[in-house]
Length: 124
Image 1 (tube, rainbow, N blue to C red):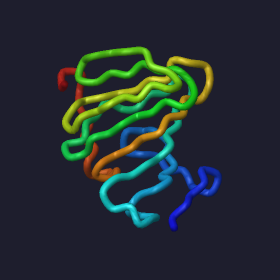
Image 2: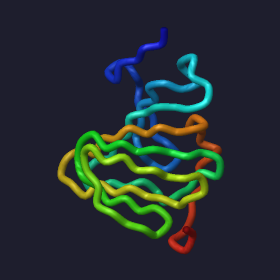
Image 3: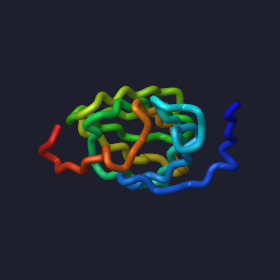
């Protein structure tokens, strides 16, 4: 049985600039087709705008408030919001609050640095 507690999982910085703790993934469990991580962004922090050619993502906000942009569509989000990010959609999340933004990232297939592509403001 694979059980991971957030306090025991080391943090690392993803290619887009967020700090994550990979709870369950191919690298540390029996999971092979997806991954689950907790991401954190400091107040005023934001990820680099990017997309994933192969991976679909779900963000689920736990603490804090943010501005989410996906393919040019922007929305304010907060605790309890689940955000669907389809493969190929350029996206960026910005912490708009005064506390650390914490959210879960579910990726299928699992997160890999080589599936993150940076884009400029003209890419949707």
